[in-house]
Length: 522
Image 1 (cartoon, rainbow, N blue to C red):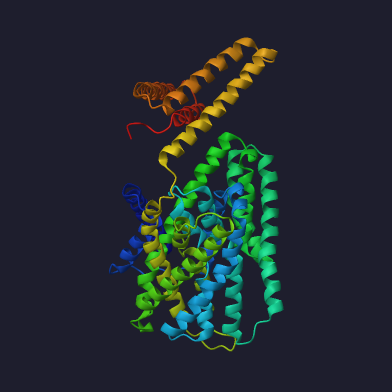
Image 2: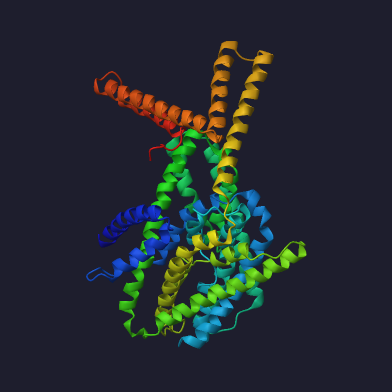
């Protein structure tokens, strides 16, 4: 029961923290980690134990799936080469740098330092996506940051398995076996992801039941992860591939009404899981410090040294690759985009799951050396990167000036709406000319579409009077919808209509109200 109470408590805390994060315009994951640490420091708070199964099987798949769906295929293709270089080269460099620093500043042996380097080598897709979600980054920079964090799992997982084999068995690793294992991890994950995406696509295309579609959407990432892990492939890669493939087919999968429902459910699931996992990361650090009191007083400095090493390794490789690419292209060498990409390298859920999965003993039955220290340092580095990089990433983006101008984003939004509405009106004109539809129906729709175009043009104009008229239109339209809602409630309370009818009509009114945009008063 204590575990359930802890989860409920974290959800309540996360709701409050997220509210303040939105008001303060700071990333919620960073604030959640801080809140978790502060709560963990309070006297009487029970120690929270996290198993790798909870992180890997329950939390990771849907969060990875949501992050992958946000990655457009067009932008992913544009950054394929740098993503491939960072997913392999940066992981190897980060692991090597951590090994060197860990051997110098910690008492752990070289083999366990290799394990620590493999655990912390890759950025975390859940943390990176959560931190970058509210930043107005250019599409390619956003795609590069997210794609690198999503696709570096195969490299880091391979490193982790090799390092763990060396630490447990004490033997030498075979290059042939290592390469074949990498092929199974990456290739198997890719194949399983495609198969799961194809199966989910077929099922969702042949059903119009909102409940069934929602269940399929929720089960898809878990199915991909479990199937891939069962055949020895990378579950994370499978989930990411499935999400990217299905994300490209979002408009063909189902109807608009079901998309709204599935999207709302997924947003709720992502919020709950992110709230719990980032809160647990913060809660776990004080509990680990109390439980591992004999580790020594130097662990904060050791964790800080490792975190700084990871940042410097990332800065070095990103700037070198960026400089080489910019000079080859003949353009001016700039620092702004590489600086943001370098700083968006937070660690999070995936490294924590890897550290928790370390066995207690080696193959000969002796305790695994420095296991507790690795778990403590991993958690501390995660907290440091989420807090420091999380709170400073947005100011850095503003300082570099690469963020998209809000006015440009607004103009692009309204220009797209106008073009879409004009395409619809053009089709209505074609129907009228060819007499392919009843004339009175075409006239009604044509008037409606012309009114829509006028509203879009007015809303996008700089004319204060026109904008005021459109604002008054939205207020009056929303007022009329509220009157209709009140009449719907009266009809139900008087027994004129059933609850099923009330719910269906209320959903239509809600969708129409949502189409008006945000309330100007809020």
